[in-house]
Length: 395
Image 1 (cartoon, rainbow, N blue to C red):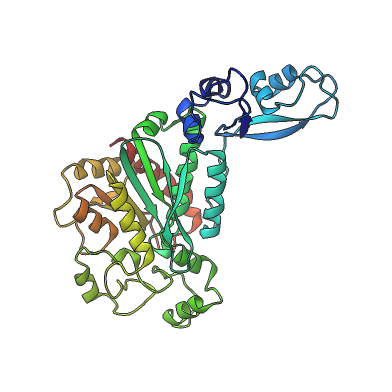
Image 2: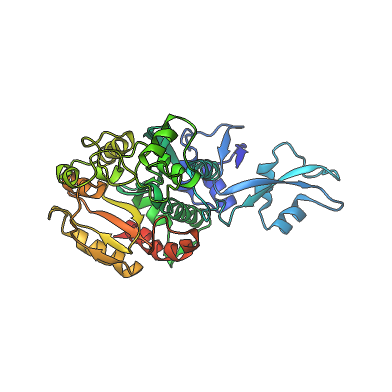
């Protein structure tokens, strides 16, 4: 919601008027100097939007504010050109509305278009989100990273490395929306106050690493050369439910230089719906973008969300730091998932991250069943994952 600066206003006064934490207002207006506001300058207030109201007989700003349970000052700020003394019947005024419920619907077939629309709506409502492209997929779709918070500790989450594990993306987005709501409404999640996390932790989130593959699984092949090649790789079948790879038939989670040769020796040697590690490491733009992001941000810990099995893989070649054990034990406690230190699998993002950065890395396998997991498992999966999201920030 946009308002305009009046004489004597400050960002602190807006925080009081709208009951929004001051850091969220400051971060929603990165180009504004808080100590040098100019009259008429636009200011974004996060967590609010405007609704229109037609003045009725007997209405006043006081009556409208009382009925809507908002302050008169917030009403004045939303209507800088209105004269509150001479309201006219039928006159349209703007009423600030605090958003208290989720604005996205994650319980659906969640393809790259749904994700892009949801990210745009969230960024408009919560402009303290930092959103950027970290690269493009094979088909040119943006790989979007969002950041929330100002802490020195950078915690990274990602989803949908594997195409038919796309339910990880809406699971992540459900928490993102819940976190934003808790921040702007001064609410707790599972008894924990969220604002200290915002001050202490920077969340780096790539909700969908493999948008081409996700769209292929959900919507079928596109009518172009990419779709034709995917059909060929899939032996002519239009059933892509078993497809894990990117659009070129490369398994993005087998693309990293962490014993890649072992995987290459025992996995398919040409493009396939799953498991082909490429002809060499880091050939795919999606895997390269994720490697560059880790190098840029120096994650304090990294969580890659996959499905299925309700297990958490947390070790690699005895290179993981000692604190990884305590972290995964807490993840297990809050989720019921089983921690597994080592598994005979290599070349994954988690493996490479532990190897190159020697920081805690985790592959979290959500849910049970056959991929793609049905959306009717969403709420059960989310409730178990919620504790992991929180623990990754406080551990």
